[in-house]
Length: 436
Image (cartoon, rainbow, N blue to C red; front, side, top):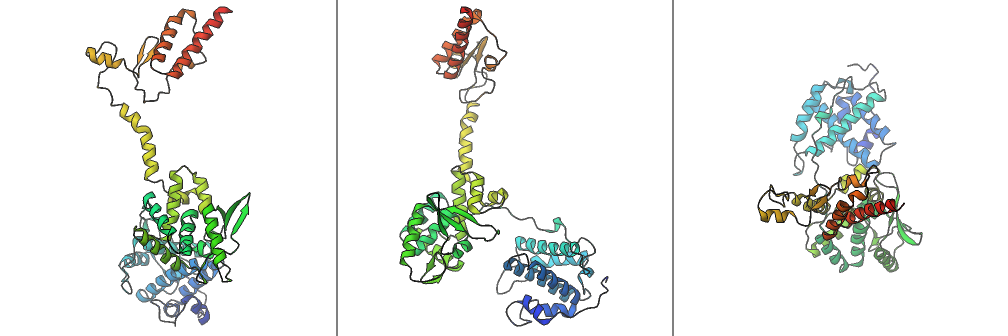
């Protein structure tokens, strides 16, 4: 143990504040119980929580509190010899890593998922690093958690509705209760997070440059933004405001009550059931809008601004390029790829092969060159096509007119218009030079 300062008992109100609701001892790990075995570590953890509460949102502090309390309780129950954070060794972390995925769940909850284990270990690693960086007396003496300790997360595609299912949902919403329709269309047409929708103030709709915008207050990412409102949403919102008889400071209410995420989820679930498309979560509509937008050519920068992302990396996660975009890009090159296999091997117009094959070789995709033919299929692009004739150093005169005229006529017969223009330009230039 390297900490020499005297052990000070944790004030009861301070510990109670981070125990949360309920009587002390009702949780799996209680701060008073942890302090009884590891008082210095408990004091360090609570001091850290008190500091991050000054800069993080309450939900983030609550999550960190639960993770630290869980680790502290496990240490107190399994390693009573540890009284401070400076006593924690690597073997303690390795044992805790084994415990986490096998921890029995409560009330039928299954054991922790790899993603949850990753979050818990990541939060602990941040806690260890910060206590060292901030110069706490009770800080780890060495690095305890490494990148390799964190389970590799899965990276599935975001769940979004297909165009067909999205259409079914919107048609079902049109027949639903007016407020349910408004809620579903707001989520589907603006990409709002459900928390943002519920928190919209009464004056969230503004008019700028002759059109209606929705001002999204400072939220999850500590930024506010403006989202353009579809004319149909403007009409639905005006109808909703005219039908209200409450005085709540919220843009959308239901039966005189403020919206909450559970109410919104129930509304969407009811409309999705009527549409016959199964369960739909509110956040799926955010994914759906982003996917629809990127499939129809909206830039990533514009999508990021609409969704309130601070980095394009976030946009790539939430608005992953979807199947239709990949299919469209593939279709653009499919014909060119197919053209590689369009002719039998050995097919040439220079005398090789049978007479019928030589005849096929003189088809529409031939390009007549000065000393032969190019048999590149018409579907394939060529960055070197007519490169010499287009070069600034290319020189010709009337002595080459028969060849240039033959090339022009050959291109005319095959509707190769850009080559016709090129050779006609060369012929005209030769004629002008001969006249001067």
